[in-house]
Image 1: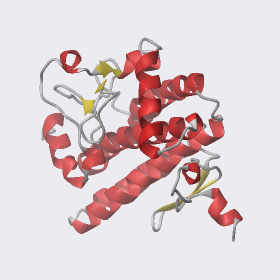
Image 2: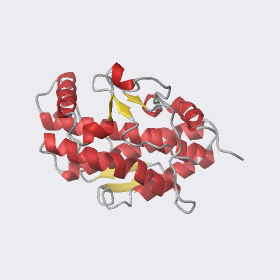
Image 3: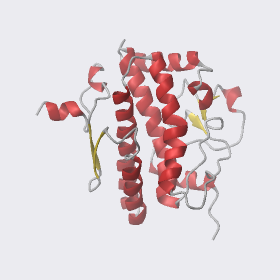
Image 4: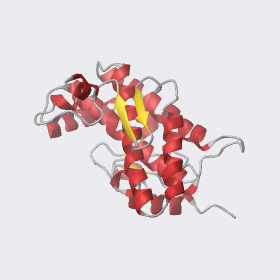
Length: 245
């Protein structure tokens, strides 16, 4: 039985929530102020990243560039995990998120900042697992180069950034798992947990924290720094929460 088009799959999984939504129509993204994420990662538009960091810092009411950089990274990581993990869990398919074809708008926020015109499935060898395809599509093709770009604009440690990537993955998992259960998709819920657990074994993420697959929940070994935001606090998975008990 042929797989449904990726556009249809992403349309279905957009029902999970705003983070799982991506624009897929054809058009001229650059004419509307979008730029391919590859240009952001390769330093082609350092001003765009700096502008985004400044915008987020202003929105948060902080002058702490590190906090803004941390949350920009975690936010984009969450978006990327969401639009990849949901199709994998629900349809057994992974979208091709080539960074030359996935467009991002520095002045827009979720769900309007990402555009993937005419999406297709990620090509893979027949023996390549879903987890391996997710690892390639999100972690290696996006989060590694985004890590380098963010690091170049801030003094954040790798421990914080990779902790953010893992936390974003499990945050995605929790929302998706709950939606799958509520919409009578228990197999997809179980698949999502298994995929996330496998992804957390990647060398970049392996030492970032501990996954409890039964909830699912995560206890990280670092902090995203949100507590430094005026009125902010500690996230549920934060290492500082446990340290203060």
